[in-house]
Each structure stands twice: as structure tokens, then as C-alpha cells.
Amino acid sequence: GQNIDQPTEMTATEGAIVQINCTYQTSGFNGLFWYQQHAGEAPTFLSYNVLDGLEEKGRFSSFLSRSKGYSYLLLKELQMKDSASYLCAPWDSNYQLIWGAGTKLIIKP
Amino acid sequence: GAVVSQHPSWVICKSGTSVKIECRSLDFQATTMFWYRQFPKQSLMLMATSNEGSKATYEQGVEKDKFLINHASLTLSTLTVTSAHPEDSSFYICSARVGDRDYGEQFFGPGTRLTVL
Image (cartoon, rainbow over all chains, first blue to last red; front, side, top):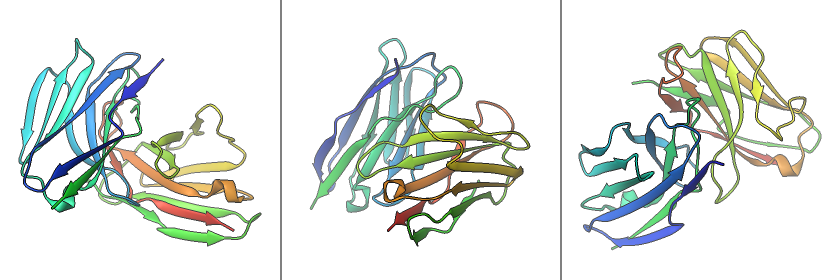
């Protein structure tokens, strides 16, 4: 079957760094997306990894290891507005996004 | 960038009525659009894949006669919840895939919150 595993909730302090891990099992693999979803809103695109390694985009970086079925999202210089859910979504062999429940990130002053 | 709109953003209706939700790609053509449903604190659930000019493909467990999908043009797909009941209250989100390739990126609409009384 297809499965996504992320921590349910994480707490971090404003200005700090946090790493959100994701492990996945899918029928085939065509890359992995990270989305941010604020409460009551639709997801917004953060990053896409298809090759192993680290992709950096401003304060956010995403890492992928295909052999381990593992990815993480790294958020630096945390701001209060980063409080949201973060969704790891791999593409399976049919280019269908497989969604987990996401990680709720709480930022404290 | 690619923008997807949804209308309405929220709707409250009485049990037994039908509600239509529109999903539009504003600055690109979308051969394929997706409809998702999300209950509170749960993950996005794909309901159906909508292809322009053809019938939608529904996921297992989604009633095609209850959730009518029409993708009449390359920029518009509609979801009609027929004879809505309180258990249909949810957050409905559409996304549109750029281009006609399976690996085209998906862009999400802002979502429609449906409350059925």
C-alpha cells in the first residue's frame, strides 16, 4: 500500500530552525512535494524534489533520499507566520499526489 | 504564476439542496483538474480527477451520482453536491494541472467551505 509518515505536531521558537521529517512508501515514485497549509486555507506549494539531495529556496530547504524513502523540510529563521501544517506529498507512478495528514507546526515567541 | 480560483469561498445550505462549486484556471489551460475534500484535522482526500471533454474518474468510495463533475472547458470544472446532507459538510479544494502532461505541476484553488444544516 501507499503510506506517508510525518510527525503529527511540532513546536519551535521564533528565530530558530526546525526540521520536519517524512518517510513514504508509494507505488512508483516521480518526485516529492512539500506544501504549506494554513488553517482554513488550501495548500500552497513550497518545494519539489525529484533527485537526491538538498534543494534550497530562501528560508526553506528540502532534502530527498530516494533509496531511503525519506525527505525533510528545513525551515530557518522561523517567523510566527510559519505556524501552519506542512504536507509531504510524493508523486506515485501515475503522477498522483499521495497525501499524508501533515505536520502541524506551532511557533512560540 | 498559475492562479486557480474557486467560487464560492463558502456556502451554507439546507439539507437536501444541491450546491455547485466552480473551479477556474485564470491564466493557463488545464486539461486535468482534481477535486479534493478535507475534513478537519485530516489529510486531503482525492475525490475525482476531471478531464476536459470526458467523464471524471472517481476514487473508490466516492459516489459519482452524488458528486457531479463537469469539465466543459479548459479553464472551468464544476463540482455539484446533490442532495447535500450534514455529513457532506467539508472543505472542498480543487487543483488544476498545468499543461497536458501527467507530470505537470498542480496549482490549488483557495477552497470552498460547505456547511450543510
